Image (cartoon, rainbow, N blue to C red):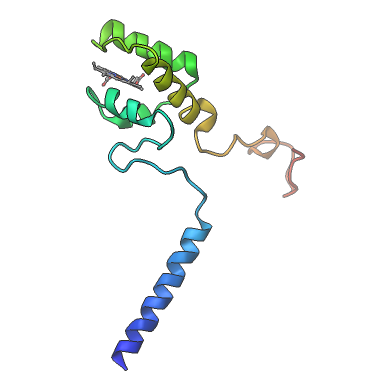
Length: 129
Ligand code: HEC
């Protein structure tokens, strides 16, 4: 009966695993090597933006097109980053501004002031949105 006990254990494990996967939020596929989100332009970023530092430095930042372009100009002016001819630079900047934008920190919004300690509201009622 040992074999079937194992089979049952395996089935239960798989069920638990499936439950965990089903509960996980849908996430974009990332490249295991660089951690970059796989979407149009990611290969250009992988090739150009991991030469001097980790891709983690890139994926830890958030900003719009102006932010990323400014960062590229700063690295070109002070860190020996080479020129990125068009359409390469545009592709990189639009990828970054789309997938690593400041609206995309992946955290919940701040609590409204009425829910913070010290507000007049003492009951557990929820604040109107
Ligand atoms: C020629 C080398 C080089 C290349 C290529 C390069 N960087 Fe950098 N980058 C640097 C250096 C040097 C720093 C400063 C590192 C530090 O402070 O430790 C930096 C810092 C950064 C930072 C952190 C800025 C901060 O305020 O903390 C980000 C984000 C970044 N780079 C993104 C990029 C992106 C996106 C690309 C591709 C377009 C890129 N890097 C390509 C040299 C480079």
